[in-house]
Picture (tube, protein in one colour):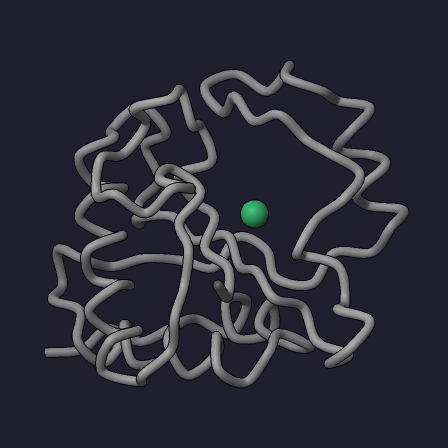
Length: 143
Ligand SMILES: [Zn+2]
């Protein structure tokens, strides 16, 4: 089984670290139709980050604490973005179960590619999503 990442998803992987791109593409290759997902964002410009920061927590259904420091910026060392935001497709921000299933798929893909990653809903990587009120379920980054 596999899903096809749309053109928009693929263009959002521009500038993202090749290891993370491999994980996302492997996840697409492993995904069933029910595990369809989309790439929301990859590399972020400092301007865009300030914009998001200014919006604060106001987006309905998507409660994220934006910081001005982010792995979505190009990493000074590698020149690539080290984070991507992904969402199950079609998107339902309130369906945590689908975000959790997507995370399982991403971790399976990461294991297959030998890439260590961290998930925005489980920063301490103990396998318990949102235990400390983590709210960044779409966020995956290189560990
Ligand atoms: Zn993110």
